[in-house]
Length: 242
Image (cartoon, rainbow, N blue to C red; front, side):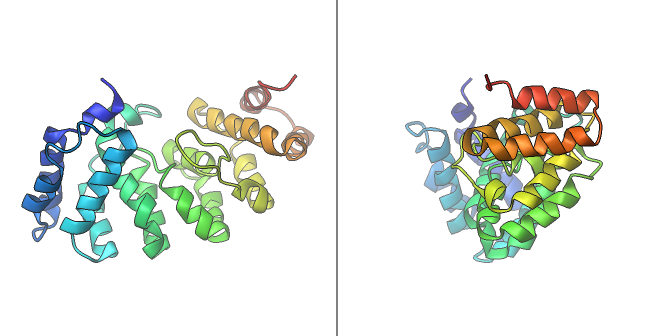
């Protein structure tokens, strides 16, 4: 099954039931009417945007209240490092909602994404927040690198990638390089391969836009010793270098 095929009429009805259970004044009928039978000809992100448009029309006009409803819908955290697309896929349109409207209350949105990413991923939704509030968001991400939850640590890295797949380029890595380097450095010895891969992908992205900065990060790391995790990250980050 393709990703887009999950988001069908059954999904819409089930999602509407979840929203109604935490928001009694949710206009379930108008939400379902706007979407059912109208998604089949749309690609993945077009479906998300169609769903988000219907959310915006059928939920309250108060972003903070809508986010609180989403908080109450999240359910249990993922039990293992990976599997977010296998188990948390139903949350993707909610992440898209935050991606589009999150800057209405960026601090609340960031708190929500910290919880969302424990169940799905916040890597797409966090990027508009980084675009508008780079210093504030990155200062919080530096704290997240020390979090006990692997998904939170991974988001601290994955969200700041220059070339995140399925997303527009983001240059906070270059514009806020000291903060960016702090994020990666705090994760260079992370025991989880899930996090190591993200840090290595950051370096690989950075090599494409500013190889001198990538080399500088690695040179600083090697001055302070080596670890198996760090060695793997560097190798992964340099995989396309001749």
